Length: 118
Length: 114
Image (cartoon, rainbow over all chains, first blue to last red; front, side, top):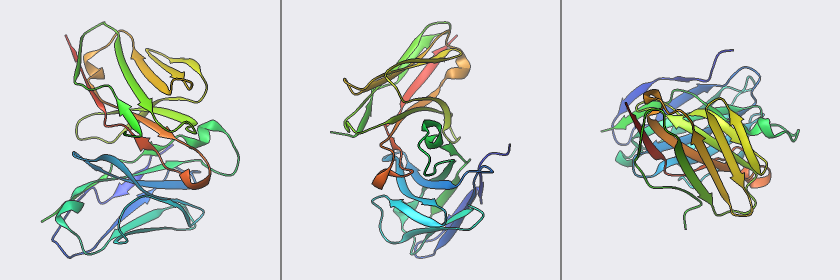
């Protein structure tokens, strides 16, 4: 079974621009979560989508947004980029659904998109 | 107090020894606990998940959970140089407003020297 894929793998942007990152989950996984990883703050949760609906959101400004499509693929967008947005952006997929089974919570990460803002 | 705290590193052990990684969490409602391994320049890789009090073994890895003490640990037996990585502890409340949200510790850098 193919793993989580993310595109692009690397991006260089300048301040004020916007960027869109893409994530394709493991086949059959319906939940996609996004994280930002920086040396100073570690891994921080951005938001989670399930069945095209955002179910949860972390403490990030409104410049960070996302969506999920009917095939569970997800995109996140960052508008008006700032230098501090330079980070590794990771998406993770899981089975997660209304059925309460522990393993449904297991999240599997993609390779990430390394964003550099100049 | 941080929500998830890991023992400060870096941790250095000789090849063949047992590496012990510890993690405490502050939210008593936490239900799911995970250990991820992250090699430098790579993304986190899930190596263990644990949901009930006690031990869970998988090969050379053993996860231990004590919900009363809000403590979870990872033991790596017969440590190999290839185990050298950053180990991340992650916690999930499950359900409600915690859907899909893992809260991570800051990570412990493990070095296994030959």
